[in-house]
Length: 536
Image (cartoon, rainbow, N blue to C red; front, top):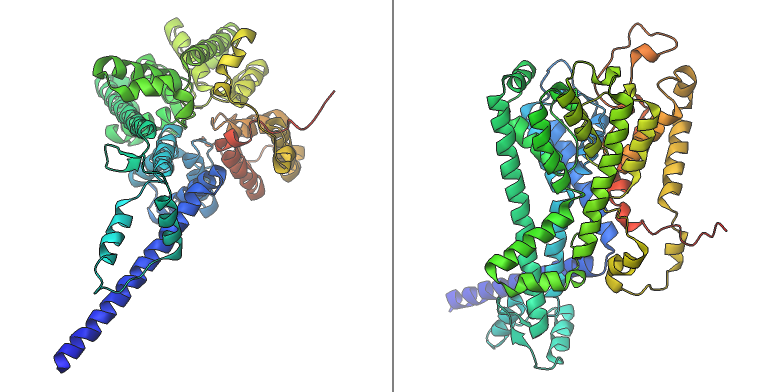
């Protein structure tokens, strides 16, 4: 009898714990659903980048740098982590300071912070939202448990309300491929979103695999490129993967201090990287559209046809219509051509291209102009380039990736997929334009660095500060650097380094630039700001 009583008490404790666990799980699920369905996507993405940056900073601090005698400051490590996560490539530390382990950590940060990968995560959120109103397997299991009258019932009020609402729905649902009850039309849409996620994931995998393989083969087969890595103590595989991820995500970090200047005579390597730059940013929508079209023709799947016919309803901002993608491609080529012609005409015989033959000058100029939009890898020292070219680069860095020149007759076809405008809220009316925010950031940095601007005006001038701010906003990474030779009052202790101009700023100035990098990475949420202002 005592044994039976003890067994009953144990069983009661077990069911109590089960109820507690179920209640805890339900509350966590409710919190997740609230965070997923009710929180503004801006705050979700901002928290994502901040959390990844913090974990990246901790990982970089735990791992040891390459040189034991030099350990970077904690704040500079955090700055580099934010720069890698926001794919900005603004640097306050020379790249050759980082050890093999730290380079791997930065590779991961760049990959998970890249636009294509984060858009893939967005598709997974879209799938979760799509199944919000469908009964899940968890709910079915709860129903089966409650059928046993010998088991204590433990229900959550939120779940009970949710189940009651679902019972009120008309029984016109059909089963999709996963056995979830959804409308037949929505079932095809859900399946199309799932297939679109597979396409994006495959796109990521194939481009990185092919890119890393080609870069690795080039470095192994070309003695001059192999010698650069050997002299700097870099492994071929690490360099290949790091450079490919950085190039595709449009980050712009390279494991060498000089960035791509060390490879400016390796035209073959530059030609391998140019397609990766375009496929990871400005040319991503046309490439994605072409890939879906090919899959539709080869597989005859209804999902791919649905994606092409309903691109505006897929909830994927990178999926454009055919005419829009064509105009985007033409605009990208137009910007590259304008920059290429101006750079070649003004710098062909200057010291910028010293030591290069005609072919190397053409490929180097093409590589530099392709990088000016968002990637930021450099084969030329920007501090020696004429001011006219620098101003053009500033304009290119400011432009969003999908800037498109659309003639008047095509404006309606490529604008917002035909959606009607809605009335703006009061808070939306208070948002400034992008130029207003950038002007504020430049003014604040000029205030924080005002003493250095007085003492060292050739380095700390408004143009260099503007280039740094716009580069951080565009997540590009172009920088004029800092030169001890330009000091009006020479400092015998000054040493030229290969990190960015921001590396010479104060901690307050660096903090402002961190905000600019986050702001630039999330600028899509404020692109339509400032429309409440009337300048007439």
